Amino acid sequence: MAQTTGIMRGGYCAIYNNTAKVAHSVSANLDISMNTRDATTKDTATWEDKLEGLLNWTASGEFLFAEDATEGYEDLYDDMIARTTVTVLYSNANTGDVEYSGSAYITSLSRNGATDNDNESFSVTFEGTGALSKATIS
Image (tube, rainbow, N blue to C red):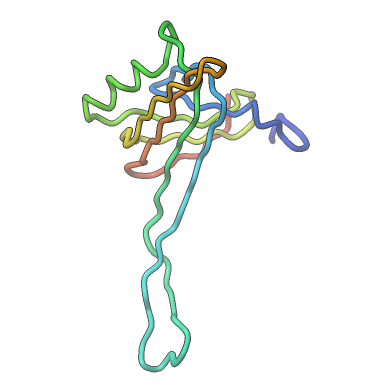
């Protein structure tokens, strides 16, 4: 049974890269999609028919840049350049709630140097390879 009740505050969810929480999160996103297969024939007339297809997922986020972050831009850069999979976890870390995890490649890493009156930030996108698992946080 879920520990958190009611509408959850957006600030609770975070992205973890290989068990380390990515530092200074501004936003965290988890997107799950299903492709469809065209099943249209001459018998379907004016409307397309679709069947289920493959599932896929991505995780992404926006973060404030800190050179000394425990898990930050430089760590993600190293993982991306190594071209290896990482374990991504989307979680609020509350015992009894649900979290999602899976293996992914870092497919986008963007660093933003803003104006003098703004914070430097970066964004990252993880593209899942294989299943996204759902588990209860223990």
